[in-house]
Image 1: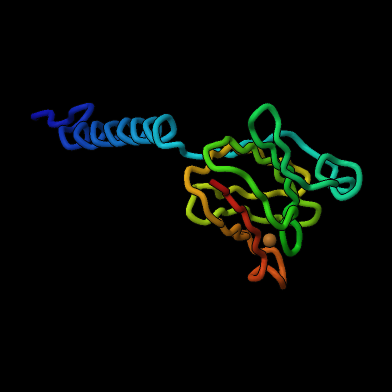
Image 2: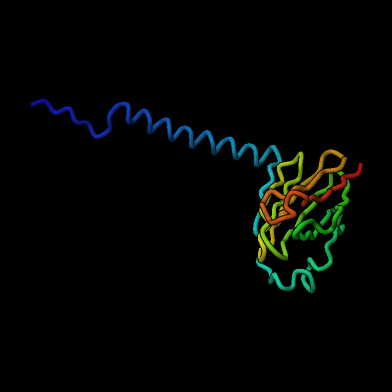
Length: 160
Ligand SMILES: [Cu+2]
């Protein structure tokens, strides 16, 4: 009797190679965009007591500060809006956002950019961004958060 069994069939090897090649292609594309295209990756920047967000935390006084030639913004995403209601920065200068929520989960999508993190109560989200074009950017909540969700907007004004 002839033994037709092979450990790896030819077509099987073909698909394995295809699969591995696709993984490699994705790694290359993602590495390239992260390093060269200014993709924005948000990170967790620690935990925070939800009960103190509005009173004694660094977010109790939502603001944009200039620190050593850069901006640092402490932002509250709440039901249903953002504080500060208007974030004013200059173009070409790095902005580090720290964002948290005093109530439920929200989103912080900045139209026309790739900023789109989730804002989770009890967590601080950190992200860095350099606005290259002056103008007004709308902030949109991308996480359903209740009755006023559809009216939850903020504003970033980038000046020349
Ligand atoms: Cu919301």
